[in-house]
Image (cartoon, rainbow, N blue to C red; front, side, top):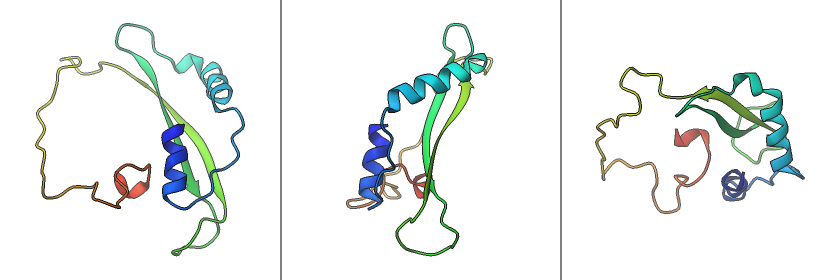
Length: 110
Protein backbone atom coordinates (compact mmCIF):
# COMPACT_ATOMS: atom_id res chain seq x y z
CA UNK A 1 0.00 0.00 0.00
CA UNK A 2 2.93 2.32 0.66
CA UNK A 3 4.23 1.82 -2.90
CA UNK A 4 0.78 2.60 -4.33
CA UNK A 5 0.56 5.72 -2.15
CA UNK A 6 3.95 6.92 -3.42
CA UNK A 7 2.74 6.28 -6.98
CA UNK A 8 -0.22 8.61 -6.41
CA UNK A 9 2.16 11.33 -5.28
CA UNK A 10 4.60 10.76 -8.18
CA UNK A 11 1.71 10.97 -10.67
CA UNK A 12 0.43 14.21 -9.08
CA UNK A 13 -2.80 12.47 -8.11
CA UNK A 14 -4.23 12.95 -4.62
CA UNK A 15 -4.41 9.57 -2.87
CA UNK A 16 -7.98 8.48 -2.16
CA UNK A 17 -9.00 8.28 1.49
CA UNK A 18 -8.12 4.84 2.77
CA UNK A 19 -8.35 5.08 6.56
CA UNK A 20 -7.30 1.55 7.56
CA UNK A 21 -5.72 -0.35 4.65
CA UNK A 22 -4.47 -3.27 6.76
CA UNK A 23 -7.94 -3.98 8.15
CA UNK A 24 -9.46 -3.65 4.67
CA UNK A 25 -6.96 -6.12 3.15
CA UNK A 26 -7.50 -8.56 6.05
CA UNK A 27 -11.25 -8.41 5.46
CA UNK A 28 -10.76 -9.05 1.75
CA UNK A 29 -8.62 -12.11 2.52
CA UNK A 30 -11.31 -13.35 4.91
CA UNK A 31 -13.96 -12.94 2.21
CA UNK A 32 -11.76 -14.61 -0.43
CA UNK A 33 -10.47 -17.32 1.94
CA UNK A 34 -11.81 -20.11 -0.30
CA UNK A 35 -9.37 -18.89 -2.98
CA UNK A 36 -6.30 -19.18 -0.71
CA UNK A 37 -4.48 -22.33 -1.85
CA UNK A 38 -2.95 -24.67 0.69
CA UNK A 39 0.45 -26.30 0.50
CA UNK A 40 4.12 -25.44 0.42
CA UNK A 41 4.87 -22.64 -2.05
CA UNK A 42 1.25 -21.56 -2.57
CA UNK A 43 -0.20 -18.19 -1.59
CA UNK A 44 -2.78 -15.56 -2.44
CA UNK A 45 -1.35 -12.81 -4.67
CA UNK A 46 -2.60 -9.32 -3.81
CA UNK A 47 -2.40 -6.40 -6.28
CA UNK A 48 -3.67 -3.03 -4.99
CA UNK A 49 -4.72 -1.05 -8.05
CA UNK A 50 -6.21 2.33 -8.88
CA UNK A 51 -7.60 3.67 -12.15
CA UNK A 52 -9.02 7.00 -13.25
CA UNK A 53 -12.77 6.76 -13.87
CA UNK A 54 -13.67 10.24 -15.08
CA UNK A 55 -15.96 10.13 -18.15
CA UNK A 56 -13.54 11.52 -20.75
CA UNK A 57 -10.34 10.49 -22.47
CA UNK A 58 -7.47 12.92 -22.51
CA UNK A 59 -4.40 14.24 -20.75
CA UNK A 60 -4.93 15.89 -17.39
CA UNK A 61 -5.44 15.32 -13.71
CA UNK A 62 -7.67 12.43 -12.70
CA UNK A 63 -10.94 13.83 -11.36
CA UNK A 64 -12.33 10.48 -10.20
CA UNK A 65 -10.42 7.41 -9.03
CA UNK A 66 -11.48 3.84 -8.28
CA UNK A 67 -9.18 1.91 -5.98
CA UNK A 68 -9.44 -1.88 -5.71
CA UNK A 69 -7.40 -4.98 -4.93
CA UNK A 70 -7.04 -7.90 -7.32
CA UNK A 71 -6.54 -11.32 -5.72
CA UNK A 72 -5.29 -14.48 -7.40
CA UNK A 73 -4.11 -17.86 -6.09
CA UNK A 74 -0.48 -18.57 -7.06
CA UNK A 75 1.97 -21.40 -6.62
CA UNK A 76 4.37 -23.79 -8.30
CA UNK A 77 1.98 -24.75 -11.10
CA UNK A 78 4.64 -25.79 -13.64
CA UNK A 79 5.98 -29.38 -13.58
CA UNK A 80 9.45 -27.98 -12.79
CA UNK A 81 8.17 -26.04 -9.77
CA UNK A 82 9.95 -22.82 -8.85
CA UNK A 83 13.07 -23.36 -10.95
CA UNK A 84 14.62 -20.09 -12.16
CA UNK A 85 14.27 -18.95 -15.76
CA UNK A 86 16.96 -17.34 -17.92
CA UNK A 87 16.49 -13.62 -18.54
CA UNK A 88 18.30 -11.06 -20.67
CA UNK A 89 18.95 -7.66 -19.08
CA UNK A 90 19.21 -4.87 -21.65
CA UNK A 91 21.02 -1.75 -20.41
CA UNK A 92 19.95 0.33 -23.45
CA UNK A 93 16.17 -0.16 -23.55
CA UNK A 94 15.00 0.40 -20.00
CA UNK A 95 11.65 1.36 -18.47
CA UNK A 96 13.17 3.21 -15.47
CA UNK A 97 15.00 6.36 -16.53
CA UNK A 98 15.84 9.41 -14.40
CA UNK A 99 12.59 11.27 -13.79
CA UNK A 100 10.57 8.41 -15.30
CA UNK A 101 7.91 6.15 -13.81
CA UNK A 102 9.88 2.91 -13.34
CA UNK A 103 9.46 3.18 -9.57
CA UNK A 104 5.70 3.85 -9.81
CA UNK A 105 2.66 1.68 -10.24
CA UNK A 106 1.41 2.95 -13.60
CA UNK A 107 -0.11 1.15 -16.56
CA UNK A 108 2.71 2.30 -18.80
CA UNK A 109 5.26 0.47 -16.66
CA UNK A 110 4.00 -2.99 -17.52
